[in-house]
Length: 120
Length: 108
Image (cartoon, rainbow over all chains, first blue to last red; front, side, top):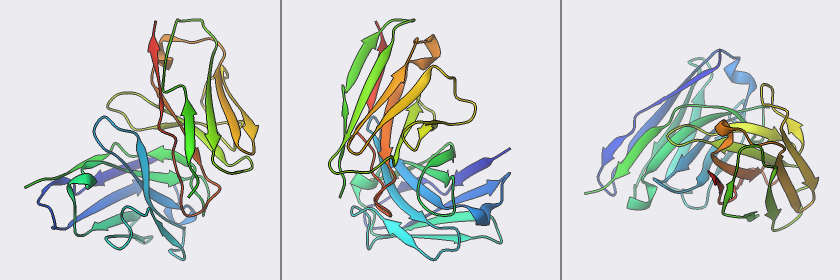
C-alpha cells in the first residue's frame, strides 16, 4: 500500500524557516517524480515544487522561487521542502504527492497534509 | 505561465443528474490535462489523467474529454459521494504545473 506521510508543519514567525518532510512507502520511491502542493485554508490547490526521480530537474512556482528548496533522499525514501523567509501568504496545508512517472506531474497518491501557519 | 479556468465555480445538482464541468487552458496543452476530486478535510484524489484516461479504482460514471485548450469532466449519474470540489490541472508546461480554481459541486 502506497503511503505518504508529511511532517514538520507548525506555527512559525514571518521571516523564519521550516523544513517539511514526506516519508514514502509501498512503492519504488526512486522511480517517480515527487511534488509539493499547498492549499491555503478555504482556497484552491497550488503546485509549489517538484523534483524528478533522480533529482536531475527541479521546479518551483514563482511564488516560492528563491525561498523554497526541494530535495529528496532516495536511500531514505524521503522528500523534503526547505522553506526560508516565510511569509503570511505561505500559510497553508502542504501536501506531498507522488507522480505517476519519473518526470512530470500527475499526482496519483497524496499524503494527508501538514499545516504551516506563518504568523507573529 | 499557462492559466487554467474552470466553469462553473459552483454547481448545484441532484442525485442521478448528469453533470459536466469545463476547464479551459490559456494555450494548447495537447491532452496533458488531469482531474482531481477533493472532499472537505481530505487530500485530492486523481480521477482522470491525460484528458480521458480513468485512474484505477475510479467509477466508470466519471469520464473526461477534450484536447488543445478545452476539456470536460462528466459525471453520468451523480451519487451522494460525488459531492465535492473538482480541480483540473495541466501537466504540459513542465515544471510549472497549474491548477484550475476549482468547481464546488453541491447537493440541490
